[in-house]
Image 1 (tube, rainbow, N blue to C red):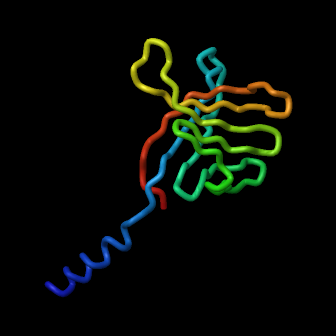
Image 2 (image 1 turned 120 degrees about the vertical axis):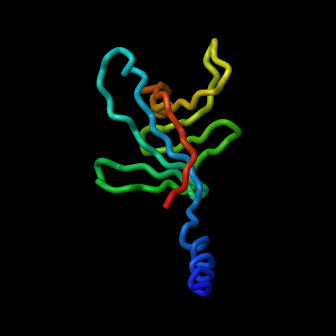
Image 3 (image 1 turned 90 degrees about the vertical axis):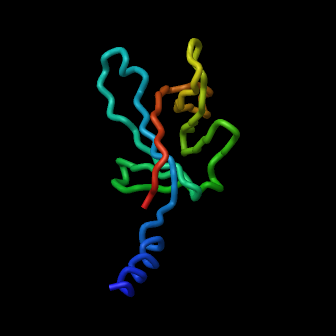
Length: 124
């Protein structure tokens, strides 16, 4: 019985470890006007930013080397726009809020703004 317990304890740490990341869910700020939007979901890991591409019907990983990563922002560039995640402190707040902006860099204008919830978690 003791041998089985030792084997289980030795194997447990190797089978239960997972990479830690940030699960991000972003809702279009126009939803406060009563419009219905589905949240956009992302996972930020050490290896990159993962999202579900509806057109391809698959998960896509943007490698960390392709991301612009700063002190309080992460930006992912696509063919026609950028998604910029940033931490901002709104007037009257004391804690930062994660937001995401969709920016059309070809026409130099912002397209959409999102408020995000981020939770640290283990990614499998």
